[in-house]
Amino acid sequence: MHRPEPAGKMATMAAEVAGQGDTKMAEAASGKQEAEAKQEQGRFSLTSLALIAIILVMFFVSYFTKTEVSGLQIHPMKQFVVKPLFGGKEFSFYTPTIVTLWMGLAILAVVGLLVLGTRGRAIVPNRVQSVAELLYGFVYKMVEDVSGKDGVKYFPHVMTLFIFILAANFLGLIPYSYTTTSQLAVTATMALLVFFGVTLLGLYKHGFGFLKIFWVSQAPLALRPVLAIIEVISYFVRPVSHSIRLMGNMMAGHAVIKVFAGFAGVMGLGAVAPILAITAVFALETLVAFIQAYVFAILTCVYLRDALHPGH
Amino acid sequence: MEGDIVQMGAYIGAGMASTGMGGAAVGVGLVVGNYISGALRNPSAAAGQTATMFIGIAFAEALGIFSFLVALLLMFAV
Image (tube, rainbow over all chains, first blue to last red; front, side, top):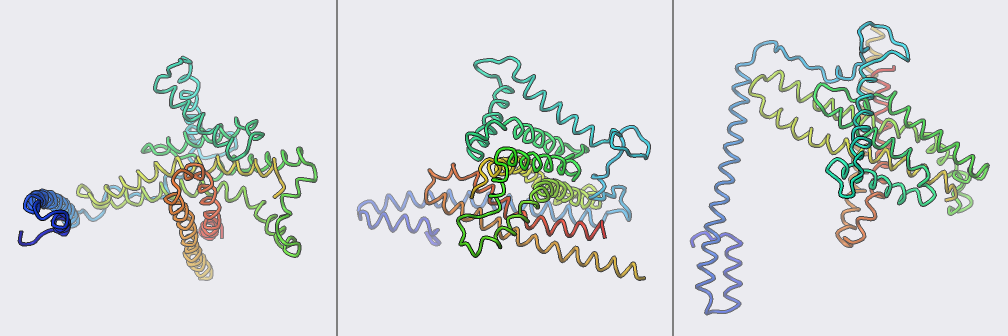
């Protein structure tokens, strides 16, 4: 034991403290452990070194062999261009576009999961049915927890929004598909629907008492008018942040993936590092696709709670 | 010439506006960090507060979104 590992040394010392008689055995054991650890460490560092070497070699090979203008010129924002589905250049509000197509596919996916998947109504659910039941239970619990018992009446709206955004986000992750939730028109429609729906609901339920939402009754009296102005601003800014949060997250993530794809396109065959980066960002985007749908739904629940119980 | 200068100003402004997203990053980091430190103190209470954490993240993120909006407006609307 010329150069003991710190962990092995500590184990030996502990064994010495515990009993002089066992020292030899402990030493032998710790020596064995140490050898194993060293072997493990050696294997690990060799693997990582080999990986780094491969990446570097690939990088240099691709750098020195690249053609002047690669055939794969990728513009990161081009994927968000809205094209009419059946050709032509003119747009009306009823023109079927590629966005319409993918929104329709998202609805089909939802129908397939929630309607066709649960058609069997088995007591012991199969895989599709248990996924559908999990989603239903998840959203139901969220509405119940955040909006309260009387918010459960509006559960279908929250469920519709959540499941549609989730399906649209996940469909957008398929290469060459279109992410409909990266369009402000789509998200703003949903956010404005929530905003006006919640405001009208609050006015219907409480009349002018709904204006208590702007009057923070726990604050000191002198502060309340100032807070009221801030509350009014933050109330009317809700649909803006609600819609742009979803749209910005989806658009930025997909643009980042396309930027790395552009690097890969320029580097050609040896683009190992960009492909690794794309893999990592793609994993993150899968998470973001779920979290943004969840955040959209939970904010809807929060706004609903504020409308049902306007007093602070 | 004049249009070029206006466009240059718009691009510089868009770049400066996107620094505001750093503030959102700090805010989200504070929310999640405090949630985790609380969750490690009392893991049994953590599950009930996940929704609150996400609401906090959403509110902290909202102001970063406005800087993104300003950058977008400068890039495409001005």
